Length: 541
Image (cartoon, rainbow, N blue to C red; front, side):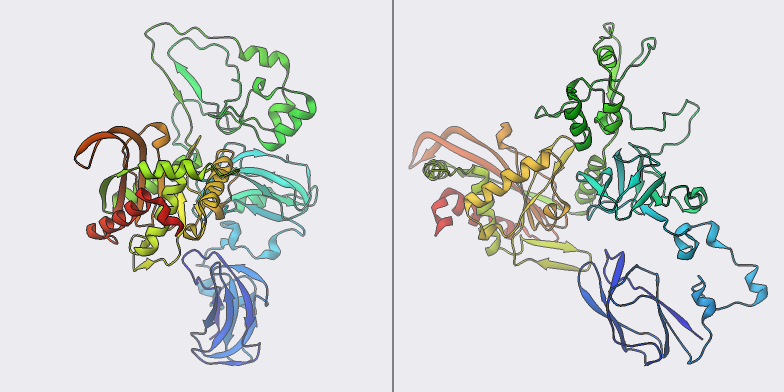
């Protein structure tokens, strides 16, 4: 009996595979254990062997073509066997007539399982893309195309807010935008229906209806109260127990660095029309200004937003802000780390006199400027090369001791925290580390970091010293085994050579995962780190 071979899942993160080459062709005999093909995954190209014997009757994916995991890859059976029933959309052999009635027709239940030929010619279903390695759902920050607009390949369809950044999502197809599955401000899981593109006038309601939806992360249980408008996520609203007046939109919020929050397209349109963005009410995610706000802007509307509202003394009031994708992911990952990894903490205090003199002398070189954070990152990188156990990662079935050093540097942004990664930090000079961290920090605050720049860390440094924090603890950025918390440099009395003198010290706290880093191992790492930071000239030897 014929056996259907589906695209295998050859890695834990694999969602689709590409056939790099076939080692058997249709008509060839196949023995159990023979290599059928080489499959390119998201991580490597791997040999895929057959678990069946027979004749290779059909190849569903040609060399160089890509398909999703569990999609039809090949069929093996007896020579000359009729496999037409398997090629007509079913992954099972033909059934007896009595059994056929008992089987559910799934073509009207899950569009993803429907045969490709059911789509009208030229119609493409666009799903929520996975724009970062940890992304599970996305929020449409704004649409840059409306239903009925012509879309060219490469056009920006929408801005998608992920757990790490807001990114432009471009179309890979040309045609007319026929259907939008999510409004601005709404969320959906990866691979859920986002839009449908095809020839103008094509009927797509049935396609959208039959597509199996994922439950939106932003959906709430129904209550007796009137539902929120289905458009964008509302601007953070002031809630009071006063009689309700006619609501007016609030001006767009301003980030901590004074930048008005607006999409790139909205900024461009405002510049062309001579509109002051600070006067425009935003209706996008968290009050962000989007295209429709510029189109609908009038000076009268702006004036209405400036009218104040009297709140009597003693009344309760509060602000509500919808959790962003970044905030939700931070909550999920840090809770997972804190409650699964057995944290313990090692506290040290380093003498910073030599480091301060070293930095002052180093910065006297023209066009050179390094920070204490750069010194700490470099020192950690060199110390980690000597203590690979601290530069390790924990997985359920193994522990990975990394020979390379990629240091994540925590950067505070408006919505939370991101951790761009300085790759091969031990091989970089202090000015190179300083330039990289400065560039990452600037682009992180503007949500311009790419997912690749926030992946692959083997150790993390979190520095709150610039805020005057003397000592604190951090939660490990899993799967890493440790994170270093860096406090402020403090002037204080210290004892040197038996005398009390004025000194400068800095407190550091190393959080370790006890599954991979024992107490003595962590202490030895801190001793090595102490040698580099208290005598930074040794980092240049």
